[in-house]
Length: 197
Image (cartoon, rainbow, N blue to C red; front, side, top):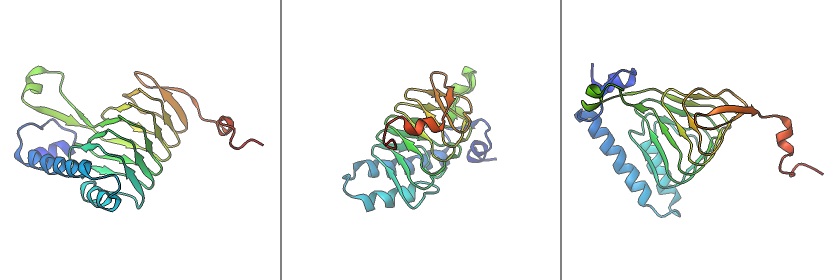
């Protein structure tokens, strides 16, 4: 079994020394670097790089530089995906975003983790568990999502949260560790006064 196959199966794999994985990450980092050096006005060139980099994209998306990921091919973004500056996706495992996902600045999605055992960790071993995000999810600034987490649709993750467990549909969740604060209700439509007469 190759190190890549181990990585895809959620087993411990050699992330530091395997030539195949090192080459894949180098290719990815070169594409990220090229993307991050483009002028913001060069939209079509940006889209071309992202479509080469990511495993799947929707028709419409906006990824504001700088953006970094490990492999790119393990990332799938839905329609109307948006991320602000400084998004980092460590995609040793699949990272799947639904439609209409908004990500504020300085957010991290990390499928990668390291063994607690120092001997294994010092050998360069790590694991990767998938992250799945539903439709219509908003992440506030500086959110970190850890390996193996699923976040339901129509949910808001508050700024600064550390998400280390699954979060259901239709809630506001905040904190370190992130916890459900409350359900999102029809009353939330009235909060900003736009729909009031």
